[in-house]
Structures are given as C-alpha cells and as structure tokens.
Length: 281
Image 1 (cartoon, rainbow, N blue to C red):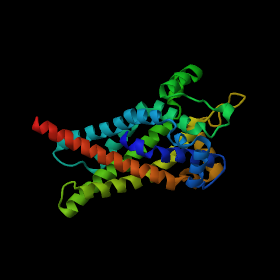
Image 2 (tube, rainbow, N blue to C red):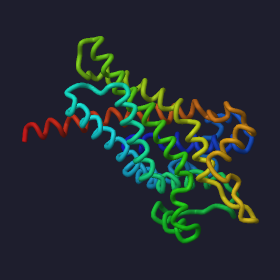
Image 3 (cartoon, one colour):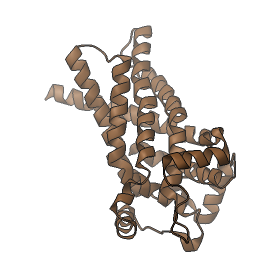
C-alpha cells in the first residue's frame, strides 16, 4: 500500500498506453499520455481508483507476499538452511496463484477506474468508489464477473512473484556470500533493483492481456471483443505483433521496478522490526 500510494500515477499511464496499443496506436509516449490525462481530468485523473488500488494491495499483495514469506520460513526451519532455487520457484508460484485469486475483484475494479477516462462520456461507468464498483458489477453483470480475467491475473501474479521474490532472495544470498555481509542496506537496494527489472520483463505480457480482458464492454449485440485469455492473446499478437505484448515496457518498468523496490524494502523493514520486537518481549 505504501508503494502504491507513490506509484499510482505511473500505473494509470501504463493502463492508458496499453489501451492505446489495443486501438492500434503503437509506442505511445508516456509524456503525451500524461498530458492527455492532465488536460482531461486534472491531477485527480492520475489517482483514479486509488482506493481500489489500495484495497488490491491490502488483499492481493499482502496475500502473495505473506504466503511466500510463510513458505520460505517453513522450508528454512524444516531443513535448517536457505531455500534451494527450486523451493524458491515453487514458493513464488504458489503464493502468486493464491494471492491472485484473492485479489482479482479489486484488480478488475482498478482497471475499470483507470480506463474509464478513455471511454466516450456516455459509455463511462463512473463508479464512485471501490465498494460501489463491487456492488454495481455484481448487480449489473453477476458476481462471477469479479473474477473476469482471473486466468491472466493468476498468470501475471505467478510471473510477478517468480520474477520478483525468488530473484530478490537469490540476489541477497549471492551478494551476502560475495561481500561476507548479512543483508546490508546496499545489498537490499541492489537486490530489489534486480528483482524489479526481472519482474517487469516477465510479467508485462500477462498484465497487457489482463488489462484488455478486464476493461472490455459488450457491444450492441451483447458480444465481448474477446472470449478469453487465448482469444485475447491471439488477437493481440495478430493486431500488434508479438512485441506488442510488451507495449509500454519503459513505463511499466518505471511503474513496477520502484513499486517492487519500495515493497521489498518496506517488507524487510517491517519483518525485521517485528522480529526484533518479539525477541525483546
């Protein structure tokens, strides 16, 4: 939640760039998109859906980070050693899968908030807040709609965890061994930067598909532009090319990498502080 409060404007720009890519506008400038948002909605336009974003982090991110940490501690205590690479991968994927299932409703609401401004005025949903979004989605489209795009949310969550948490722990262990230190600030900063780069490259294609599925609206005949993950992937590649799956990578990187770094550093700080408190009491 701390990281999201800082990164939200970049996330909004990232979503708008992905929507433009779907409309056939390749390599949209993040600065041009930012000016467009500012002109259309002012500063508040960059923070559309912030309550949904915070709710998403309180559910999805808390779950995937907490489950990974729990599994890591379990294997460490059980085996009396650091996790192997395979154990890190397994823990990352498991935590990403469960966290994504928990967080998909708030993720869907967030995408709709952020994409609303790109729709014609008469087609905008104009949700008041995250709980209004949940209520209207259930009433107008059915409760299962809250898990629309959950396939890609799960894949993205697993990819994000795999690219973020396993490399972070692995980088820390290797740097600790190389320098003969134990989780210094410099080691954590370098490791979080590596994790942020890895996570952004691995997860962007899934994030791209997820955005398109979650923002879509039915046409006059009641048909949606995509029938599912595979259909969206096929049509996206046909329309934008394989590299189109990484549309907006620079913006996505500058959104994901700082977010990952702030998240990991804050997590380590809280974990260390609580552990020290428990030892004293």
